[in-house]
Amino acid sequence: MHTTILVTGATGTVGKETVIQLSLANNARVRAGVHSIIKGENLKRLPGVEVVEMDFKDPESLHAAFTHADKLFLITPFAAEQFEMARTLVDEAKNAGVKHIVKLSVLGAEEEPGIHLGRWHREIEEYIEQSGIPYTFLRPGPFMQNYANFETENIQSEGRFYQPTGNGKVSCIDVRDIAAVAVEVLTGPGHEGKAYNLTGPEALSNQEVAEIFSEVTGKKVEFVDVPESAAKDAMVQHHMPEWMADAMLELQRMCKENRYSATTDTVQKLTGRPPHTFRKFAEDYKECFMQGEKQ
Ligand SMILES: NC(=O)c1ccc[n+]([C@@H]2O[C@H](COP(=O)([O-])OP(=O)(O)OC[C@H]3O[C@@H](n4cnc5c(N)ncnc54)[C@H](OP(=O)(O)O)[C@@H]3O)[C@@H](O)[C@H]2O)c1
Image (cartoon, rainbow, N blue to C red; front, side):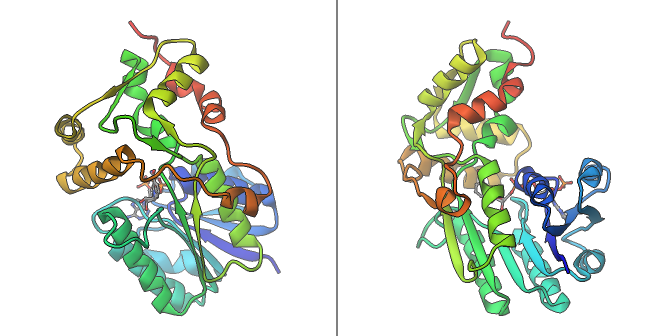
């Protein structure tokens, strides 16, 4: 009998990549939990994948998704209600007899006092620990894909990106490596009770990132170090709630202070291959940064 793995947030950055890789691994039935069926349309075509609609804020909508689910990859969005959402999912997992929860957390979640983002994730981790369901925590550092998700507009239009991170170096991780680790943990034995710190292979400053983008795209890309106040104004102007902008600034302060510059060999150990370099990420996502040439 195939194991059924439910992936929540399946149209998101990590969820989507994990569903694709689980489908290719071909040894599990994958249930992709999507917020809206329309966004999940592409996932339906993947072999071994069924798509189910679920709203974390509506417990009634979760029953169908959890029916006969053996394992859960728990991904919640960066949202004000993230703890409540996760608690609802864990409660439902318990009711449904789920045997293993793999939670997408964040690097440094266990640190005290740590930062807000880490503490919010740790609160969810603790709720999972108390549920009695075997668990594994994946704690990645900042994603390389953040550049593709949040910086393309400025890079495409001005050839610049702005962050308050100074010369700080960060060992960003490619989400394809997080997904590969998730596949291993969800389909292989021996990961229960573990927390894995996941990073890319090297720490780079944003100046170095800009140089890589310039080389890969063939057009000049510059990093502009900005004061926190300017970064916050830009986030709020883009309709980010103030609490979220403050949490982002706290995270970026950590980047500036080289607090995410350490690297781990966990991706290599768990997947048998080295994590993607930033250059490889930039090459593979080149089109995101190229569309619309600098005027
Ligand atoms: N970005 C980073 O550098 C980084 C680093 C470490 C850890 N993390 C953690 O990674 C997690 C986010 O992962 P991600 O970047 O893959 O997420 P993401 O791209 O923001 O996607 C979030 C997913 O959750 C779904 N969703 C949102 N509200 C929902 C609801 N009410 N019910 C059901 N589904 C809902 C979204 O669907 P819709 O779009 O249809 O709403 C989407 O599929 C966060 O916990 C974050 O703290 C991020």
